[in-house]
Length: 252
Ligand SMILES: NC(=O)c1ccc[n+]([C@@H]2O[C@H](COP(=O)([O-])OP(=O)(O)OC[C@H]3O[C@@H](n4cnc5c(N)ncnc54)[C@H](OP(=O)(O)O)[C@@H]3O)[C@@H](O)[C@H]2O)c1
Image (cartoon, rainbow, N blue to C red; front, side, top):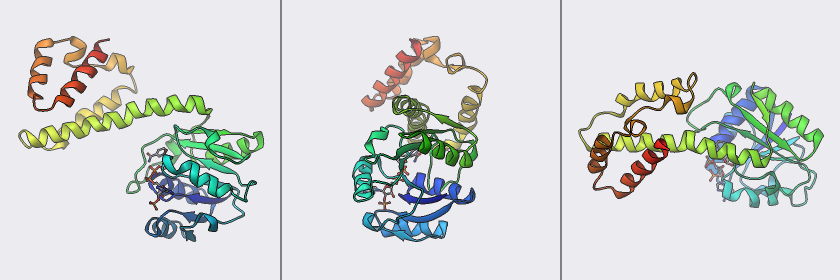
């Protein structure tokens, strides 16, 4: 398929590489800055632009992977004078209706993407939705060339999917960052001592439900230990609050 890639960040880089590897033709990359556009275009061996008005005609699909806050404006510019374009966004929490064209859809790959790190796209669950049946079939077909795990999900279901992903990934990762800082500030042990624990915690839920897999002072409600932990955080009222809230949520 002929694809125009709108965006050159974390997701655009990964999906761009996966599209190229699956044999699709990347017609052009757009990004707001020359630096981003040029970098990804060089990786994909295709032309680039920083002007939305100069985005190419003739793509079968325009995959938009820009900052969620800019999505509506970018899509409006792409649609101006080009109502026939098939616009597809990649965001978990943005409704398909954010796109102003009749031919519109969503391809949401649920993974954490960073430019610097290549992921195995074939294993990533991809959730698709389209306004039109034929476009839906086309989008599903496209997604199936990238991933073995393609599901249909409307905007309502996708909202909860993204919310759940924020708990599983972003909040868990933030807890790693807190841990890394506490280790550094109190004794200087390296964060790598946590890696076997992190890995086993993640492996365990392949076999046990997260509820069953839970261990630690909060699930046992060992208040003596919990009070000591809260004391250790005495200079950090926000962390004390997080500790208490999470512990209460685990207990419930
Ligand atoms: N990263 C993930 O893990 C992930 C996972 C699933 C879905 N998504 C979705 O993918 C989309 C992109 O996320 P990302 O993480 O790839 O973001 P990102 O790395 O921050 O890249 C954002 C892209 O948007 C462009 N941009 C930023 N502000 C803009 C503006 N005001 N007008 C036009 N373009 C603008 C940036 O251009 P410049 O670099 O040129 O400034 C860049 O090309 C989002 O909808 C997100 O929800 C991301």
